[in-house]
Image (cartoon, rainbow, N blue to C red; front, side):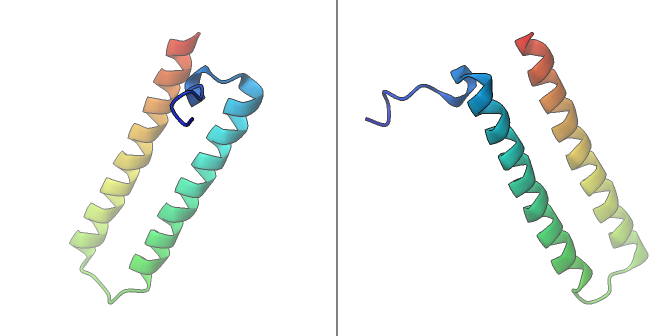
Length: 75
């Protein structure tokens, strides 16, 4: 059954690390696709582009900090 399966965070490293890399790549490709779609959209004002840039930087920074905290908490 699906519920009998071991959660991914309890899986051995040889399963967990490639899975994490794959998830990170899929998310990066998704964000890149969204970025390309926004870039090809009608021109926005400089103020809106600055806000978009700040939001993107904040998002990636919070993801990086969250991943670092998860790795540090495991050790």
